[in-house]
Image (tube, rainbow, N blue to C red; front, side):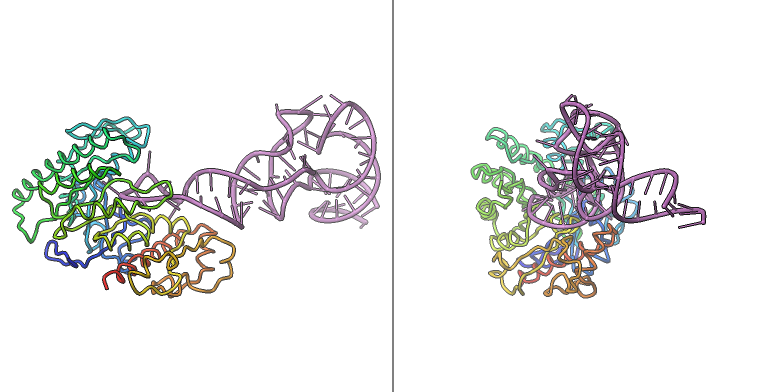
Length: 360
RNA sequence: CCAGGGGUAGCCAAGUGGUUUAAGGCCGCAGUCUGUAAAACUGCCAUUCGUUGGUUCGAAUCCAACCCCCUGGA
């Protein structure tokens, strides 16, 4: 499968979707995304529910119109946020089979359920709706993993039922409905990953996501578990590697069968002065899997102060076509916001270029 | 030449006798970042306070001389 059609519009696979968590890829607008050849984004259900809120998005006819972006829009369920805000922080919250309740700062308690997540995602008007999942923390023991897998399946079932209800209620058909994806949890436990995948496959979804946080202490994605999970999903379904990854990890995961990727790395790294470049012109998958193909420029370094070259000689982005490393260095040095924008555009183009090579 | 003020790391700058083998910031160097609480964060970066003497148990801090800078005056 090298293409998906949603709501009458086709998108090529594989595809990389930068994270526009709060309906914006930080520091870049939709025209910038277009110039970086970005074909889709991932927005976040939890964040958008909080701000600006569903009623405003509905009033504007969905997030696409709100942010004036015509590409593929996927909404992440908020599962990751439960992990981020509850497991990883001091904010107390509780997860039950019904859903999750937690408070952020001084704000009143928020109740979030699988059904609520689906409701909000319909309000967002996304093309791919993702079931709320119970994130398996990286340090979870077997009992905890088992619990998160069980709950993820339960929530997926509730999500599917609610999704079908909404489809029926809004009289959507095969051509106008958004796709529904579920997320496979289970941490590094292959048995439980398998159990999770089987449970979700039985319910039936359009696509399946690779969930969890499987970046080890060495800071690298666990390729073994990534491949294992890819094999659990029949090829007729779309495979979405949530949160993956570095350019080289995307190349590896593509080879395993993963087709959709979203990751904050290129945009965040850009804002943090780390620019991506190919050390040589990549032409094949093998080139992209080779670590020697990829390099980083820490553009804040003094060595770039007088460097008149573009960030990457193999890049066709508007930044590389028009500005020097020295200029980017200068912009970061004085802290002008243009630095973040240009760095974001360049790094995104590096990712979309990588995707373009994978398609061939 | 006279009168004030001042000389603390590449830069800015706290500190006026012991809690300072000198705070903080910038720069520089080295890192982190993977379904974005990140335009963020973490290390490292002066055994030394213009110089030389002195007082003191103890000085960047007090004293003296000298060197340099700033301001005003001749």
